Image 1: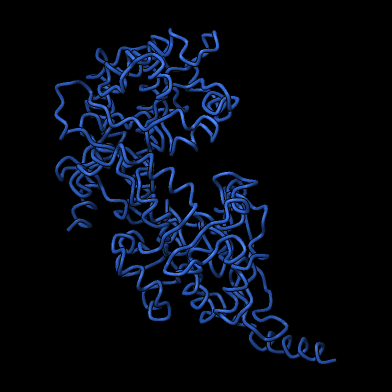
Image 2 (image 1 turned 30 degrees about the vertical axis):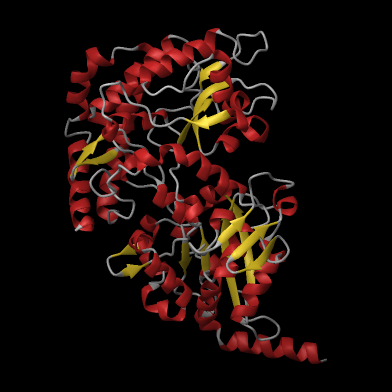
Length: 536
């Protein structure tokens, strides 16, 4: 009887507050549970959904902090990619969204994104985070509005998103030194091709393995432009991935740079000599992985681009590989000119184009801010990213936490299926020590060889910072023009890599790519305007 009365009273309360029903997720669910506690709905896009967040100690701890009930919805990357546009157009936004929307979405659908700046006094942990990481605050500030919150994976992830790896075991077997220039690398690759470094008696070695495509993205061979001092930042959805960089304060395009022409020439030479796979433009990821991870016993790949040596080649073969220090185009290039992909801000902040958002039309706003504040506390940030405490992670005291490797990694090596991973909302502070964070340990080790070159990058004079973003009008212009530019330029680049001829055809290409109809100059002017404004 008592339980039934509670349900009846809750139902009456729900009817009385019909105007405050959830706008998020397009449903008319009750805003309180059967005990009268406020309900907070969270929708998260996850890599792995085998262990529902609803069942974790992490959720129980959040509920205790907010004195509320949390209801999780989880959606895969592929499913969200199919649903996102329709849901936004229909106004179906969750109370709290994790890794769902971009800042471009927040500008376009501004009425569905709460301005979190006036709410920071309700979230002291978030306020402390943004004060400690002012660059992260710039990343999510549009004018005077904070439409979304980034997360911070901690200094263990303050690394470049791309590294170049070489099989050191093969080098040692063949008596070769680590190459320092493009020519030296080519000589090494030719030895990998002809001298059976994996020792299986077969000509099955892939001297240099690259993923399909010729764009400006993660793990792209176009990072070789850094060999001439043209800086990339191929992560985070910023201007670099669209083809734009900065030369001492002046915005320029990779598409018209001599550095790009040189990389195209180099890749063609490698392809022509059988040193990179001839089908690299058309094969899928599974074919690439079959040549990097192989059977876990016999290495097939000599050189490739990736995150860490273990994520690239698997635990069984990862020990054979080391990070290749950034190469010079040739011996005449001074060390001071050689740089490397400067995507460390995007890697650390775990934002990559989407973060934590709040629907201003959601019920139970006070409970929502209590949930978020708890998410950004030290302990629950650790639990959200790595796994619940004490089930998966132990709190050792003095800001140290230890991940139980058996529980965290046994079924899914190098992933955290039992936590939100990089889709979390939270802040791993600099004074936190994580024991057994194999992902951070591995990528930090992989990053050491590029840090000297990366430290030469001026984060404002060599590239457009990732917090620089256009408004809706400029974004539409940039997108439309970029489509036309990329359609033309990417086709040309692919053709030159396969068939050669870039030197002969470069001048006519420059004339075509600079035609007003493609909009490259217009885009450069937009980015220069934005760059000057934001940097100032």
